[in-house]
Image 1 (spheres, rainbow, N blue to C red):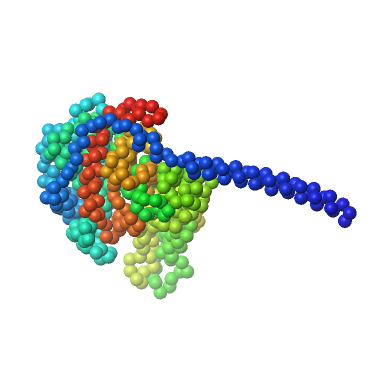
Image 2: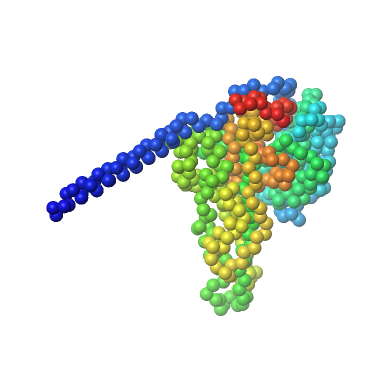
Length: 523
Ligand SMILES: CCCCCCCC/C=C\CCCCCCCC(=O)NCC(=O)O
Ligand SMILES: [Zn+2]
Ligand SMILES: [Zn+2]
């Protein structure tokens, strides 16, 4: 007992030093985090710099032109260009759509500056000749086909009616992706009518089977351009959009430009058991075994990878627009990624950027109520996070299901796409950013990861600058309309889209990006 006093005070002294050391580390971490929060605003740079002057033709549409433009858009929505599978497309509708394009955009088809080709029967390739052939061309993409839609799912208007309700046009394809098909050509039609001739040449590619992977349309257009040794300065396709109120704590709307897209895997799960009479069932059926496997997949989502991919750049670009606690966290994902990731995982549209997602999309089994089913099958569609690969995801799935009786076959799959540059010297990204801010000055522009897949992936050998964006205004709940019910776009949004493409086409006429604090960039 006599020696306990000095020993205790020695321990106490050590504890004091440990406590002080921990406090110092915490204080330094806090100081670094605070400094990052105060200094992180990657949105300065070119915004303040001086852009080369080009002739800008404003659209200044009359009321009659506005109405005409909306009429043409509605006509496009009314044609049910549905893709069911790569071998089951509505070819009658696709042919009708080709005629509509010719009728709706007579100046485009008649212009000596425009060459038009039909590719793989229903896809379209336009070349708009520039007056300065030494400028590398760029390309705008969109797709004509749509996913199926059934009014009985709960649509407020028939999905191919283009009905107007409260200044919105309802219909399959209003957001994915006839607004881009018609918006791009409408902008070009008006520009040509006003005597515009581009300095920089550009291509427009309209695919007809994007919703079933684009193996016929986009792939053949890309192949054709490769055979012609075309190199593109950059390429813009559908993908991300303007989010308004979708990210909690963000002050104002933001335009997210997809600089990459997730990978994809479709996996077929099947269970085979002996068929027989339903009056003498075994303890487990093929359907039961498969249902349990699917449940395990749903109960055990793929690991959280938030912060390990380019989604990190999204938060660094948006950090200064978040309210206080979130600004601190978004500026310091090195420390807070696990917390921010958990918060984002609460909603499907933000969960999608935190991990590889697992969606059970088809489930079939049984042929008659009194026969034991011999085969049960399910299809799982995964969208693969940038830090994952198809192989890793397949291994994780097998481990989660953990049942040898469930066979897994990879039907189709590809790894996440390369990340395009979004630096100050990136011509494509900066031209897009300027065009977005010219038309929508209230937006904050940030790079993002497109959670869905697009035709642009077939063009990766033509350019390293692949971007996925359209100025569609998405408020909470709107993302669910894409491939869902009540897909719609406001009339104002469609008009703004035409304005955006018109501005973009003209902005692309600059020869170089303006000088930023890091120097002049030649293209
Ligand atoms: C900071 C991150 C915020 C994320 C919120 C983003 C909300 C995005 C909403 C919708 C994006 C939808 C993508 C639309 C592209 C559709 C392309 C398509 O359908 N392709 C076929 C396929 O992928 O199967
Ligand atoms: Zn689409
Ligand atoms: Zn789609």
